[in-house]
Image 1 (cartoon, rainbow, N blue to C red):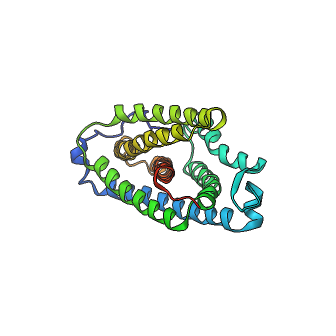
Image 2: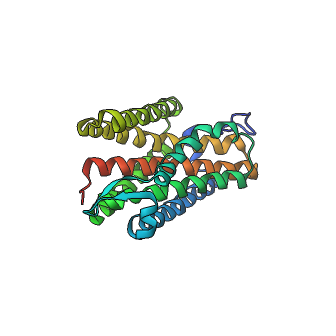
Image 3: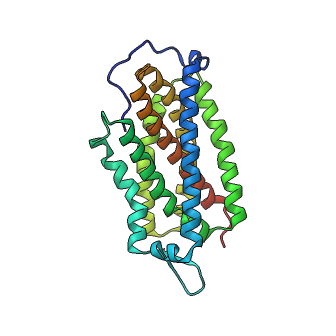
Length: 250
């Protein structure tokens, strides 16, 4: 994703000084609002793909007891498409317009939301609701910490991003080869730590991005979409890993 590292339009203040900038607050609210709308859309799609049988059966295989047995071909495509899109996004995201960045954001949100139907099929409604509110509370605290801290988190962010991709590979190996429940729990615990850290680091990175692009409204529009996507993905992954660790299955 574009980090807008093509030069600064004005001097970047220390992270402590950024908290008083009204323009920064408006920018961050725009990011959070877009992320929240993405979560609403994801929730609606997850409900549809888990509860409406004709839609559910397009993506998931259900056994005779009404339990999730796996993905259909289309379901597999929907589940892995966001990863493929993000992997190849570096080839086309630099210099994109706000509209293209918006299409990119909503496409991934829709695909992830549809694949989240597995959550409704695997876990009880009460468990899903509880883990969502726990994730939301954790997100709020972690994002606030990233917004207000004076410590530079850029090095940690780079490390955690690499860790997230390594975690994905480990999850795929475990899911398709090892199929170990104990390993899944260990990886989920690691995932909670990685994405908790990323929420704080991505929030601070968004502050830096705001000052890098200055008053360029087009660039700020792109940054809003990409920033919302990064926080959205961190939220969703934290939610998923907390469900694996603490959720009650049907």
